[in-house]
Amino acid sequence: MSNFRRPKHLTTRRMQETRPNPPKEQAKAQRPAREIRWNCPAAAKCGGCQLTRLSYAEQLQWKQQRVAELLDGICEVRPILGMDDPFHYRNKVHAVLAVDKAGKPISGVYAMGTHRVVPVRHCLIEDCRADRIIQTIVAMLPAYKLRIYNEYTHRGFLRHILIRTGHVTGQIMVVLVATSLEFPGKKAFVQELIQRHPEITTVVLNCNQRETSMVLGTKEITLYGEGYMEDELCGKRFRISPQSFYQVNAKQCEVLYRTAIDVAHLTGAETLLDAYCGTGTIGLCASGGCKQLIGVELNADAIRDAKENARRNGVENARFLCDDAGRFMQKLAKEGNAPDVVMMDPPRAGSDQKFLQSLLMLKPKRVVYVSCNPETLARDLRVLVDGGYRAEWATPVDMFPGTEHVETVVLLSHKKADSYIH
Image (cartoon, rainbow, N blue to C red):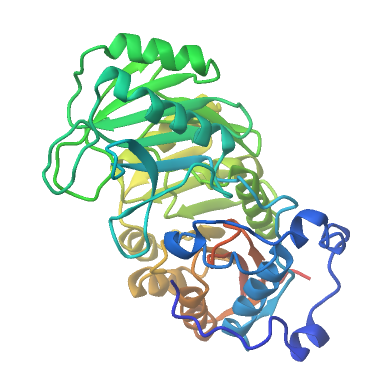
């Protein structure tokens, strides 16, 4: 839960007076799905969704005001981009397992602040296909004598079930996280599961023997299909393995990426630096609009995926480097080799001073800051504004309905560069 102070009112008079008129899409905000009161029986115990007491329209107002208050005095905050239908958007579903008092297997989520499992059969934000598959697997366990892992005694077999679904492709990956890569009846178990759910495209058995809260282990075998799935974002196709990072709300991720790419105002002549690039998704989606794309990421596995994603999409103007973003920026600053546009998508902790100071030395014409934490965003923007940048505007994007989390896209232009966007 964020430590942000909740506003007494969802919208302030000042916001109503200064907020620009929304586009036509936003004028349709008051749709039935946005007025529905969230009725989740597990909300009080789960803690995963903090705003279910509000209608979706009220949630959007709450997030709009949160960003507006934090960025007050820094830049204009444009209307938040929400979803027409805010339910069942999560394409990654993680079920924890336990047994009830009668010894019957159950699946659900951890109660807030504990490792006690709250049974959840149908979650308002999870893909319904994933929920149905999880319930089938749980119901099959007794017949195959597969015991649920006990994290206190460290005995048992099945620890977690992870489902990933493709928003565009419709592909479904099932990951069974267990204490061993072998179990009796493995082939029959998978055959029955596929028979019940032919929509499944691959099944992976992941081995996690560590006494830890980490979900996935390092070893895995493919029981059915290719061992990975594919999905599309902004017309680009991405390979997703059990370990891969991929946005959990693909539909709204496209809104986020298109917003960031639009404000970058690429003409085809720029060198674009994608800092904290991860698996390269946003940079590759923008690659058609720039002359050269450079992606930087510290995680070696993510860089490997980024290179593969570039190859699969035939993107030839991109190169991805495994390096600390701040250290790489320092190298560029020493070489005097400045990119034209920097797109940065740091973790929740925000960027670090090393990166920000190097950015100020390089003086790229435009910076597009994609933030998942408006508090650290406000902190970093003040550094950039004090260092010679003008924050033109911010656009919040609701990637996680029902929760307090909000993404924000901010365009900055250098005051001395001929790059002001009117």
